[in-house]
Image (cartoon, rainbow, N blue to C red; front, side, top):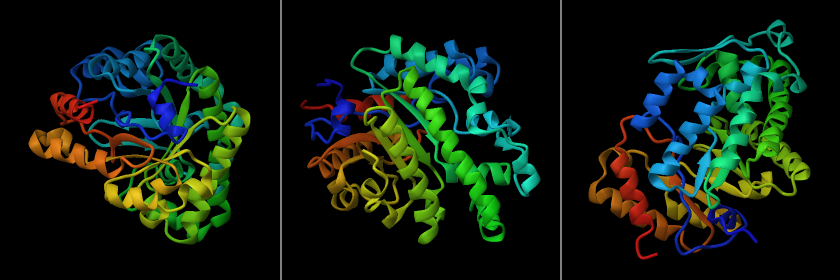
Length: 344
């Protein structure tokens, strides 16, 4: 029986003090991260340097004592491994070569050809599996197919995922080829992370909320179901966290439809709503607003207690509703953890 609190929650155990980790916990709000990133030279060089990527993953564990560490990487490393061009524009974010026609798709590699490029990521996981404290859970991750596809089709992040929706409506055969390739490739990518030592994996579907109705079921739910089922088949029921961000009513039943062990909630729903409609089916994760990491104070303390209490009747992993922002104050992270663990 595990004594790791994250794994207990994922198995359905309700705990007096929920375990905690934080999306983007290794990031620019930490001075030690900024120093290591400067040493690496640029973001992608940091991702592909196993020693430095492991170091930035470990930094928030040393500073804050989170119950889990999440592999430092990026969801767009997989499309790069599939043959997409990837670069980052300072102050603007990622850029990729686009997929707008069949000829673009034909240039991509297959699911079995990704591992040479991604080998440094697996090495980072191996380092972490030996260097993390024994009580700390190691989480691997990937972007969900729909979200990764939005970047591959548009070549960048967009406010409404318009180019991906346009391709879905205008050339559904090509669109579904992209989704299918990403689905099978994500299985292979996460499979290798688990083999290297990841104890939990998370699927980030950051743009799931822009899929509505049947499209949500087909392109958010179904790929998550296929990926989860196959990983659990290969790896003795490995725990999976799903994050269909801003899914709204799509959160309801997501556990049962996909087989994930935990559903992460964003801030578009209240923790009470999450407890009533989602936690009834299993573990939930979330959902403190990341803005509290900037503003702090009594409002932070009150909201930590609010989220903890609202989700106290079932399995819960405390987290933010989205990633911590670069302007956050590390002291507020400490205050969040102290408040969560008070009276333990």
